[in-house]
Length: 124
Image (cartoon, rainbow, N blue to C red; front, side, top):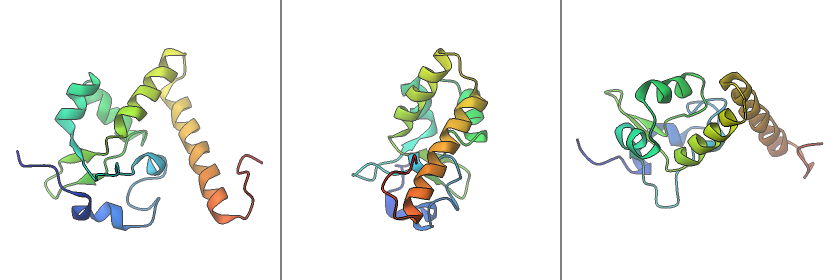
């Protein structure tokens, strides 16, 4: 398998936030400063999760690939590991995946509201 595409190769990253990347994962789909992307198999190995778990998270838009190739291969931002740790922490505290999705949705709504208003406090 070839190297992961650089940030310039991804059509997803050229769109406005919230369109091609997804409603709930937009905040977390940013590339690291070096623009490196990580293939699915590497995410699975380093995070210690199964393909089914990752795909379930993707289905719920808790985790969103930063780039998907024409052949369907997914590449993720290194920030995916922070997201996976956060999901694991919340699950360990008894939250369901639906609860976590709702939390991600609230965070996204606050960020969008803050971006469209002059109010510096998006929680108000």
